[in-house]
Image (cartoon, rainbow, N blue to C red):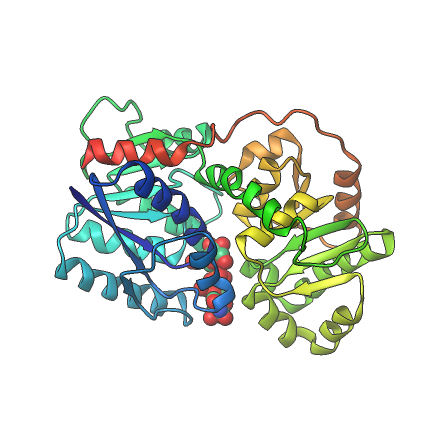
Length: 378
Ligand code: UD1
């Protein structure tokens, strides 16, 4: 029996961990024992606990309190706490997801102790090192022994950085293995969309009377400049004059930034009956909203993909994306400029029709593939 430490800390990682924990529990019992460490990066109930409850994720065996603070202080606190756990108990591998500060801290702590690092969602690149996530991804990939890529583009990116992607060798820290496995978020969307429909069929979590647009915004480049954040909110509010409601589950970072930028404007938005500024949604609520929406406006990596999985058009409020397949397909477009450009982007996406959504994110069985490869490699 191999022992795995899974390090998670931020909302998208709880969601991703649900797919692997479920698979380990269903089909790999007796072969891999998983323990979970929660770094505490996200700590509000709506950003953390609700996912463990709703998605049946095992309770963390270890919990740190490293939320808040600057990136350096936050990452350092995690690094110290994770190292202590790794020194106190023998693990055969450490599993991390995505690109957050928790991902980087987990990978670094394990690699320094010669414990194989397993990175799920490897190889993604935005080619924008001003994003903390881009540095986290690159550094985590280069500290990993087993790299699981969701798409062909991700494999290609790793090949460009000198990784051997042939997979004909036993993986080691100096000669890692790269696998294309599909996207575990697709596994989850398939698994939870029926559960979500059943749960909310007779009692929807939100009352929305018109067609609606779903929006999420939390990236620092959209929140930290108050004038920019207010401009994005105004563009979204404009949709309420075009016959749509807007549902905006608001991330704590965004709420704090909007209050700081102009508390009066925030009060006005809350008073608009067609603009629903709601607390962060749970995953089941989010899938429910995504399924019912006409358009999704987001700067989140996960939400832009869920739009594709659920066959919805999206506007990605960024200058670039690591999920370039979505832009090539056309169901997602990038728009960073606010005002006229943003409003035209909304309208143009609302007016497009898409019939074909090729299976670029795999077959919904990424988690099984990943667990099998972990068993073989450790
Ligand atoms: C992090 C990830 C990002 C991911 C996002 C999902 C990094 C560098 N970024 O960004 O890749 O897309 O999570 O949400 O790791 N806060 C609360 N309550 C919480 C959590 C955070 O109030 O439960 C506050 C923090 O104290 C901080 C701000 O929100 O002031 C931002 O939190 P932070 O942990 O820096 O990351 P995110 O912006 O959420």
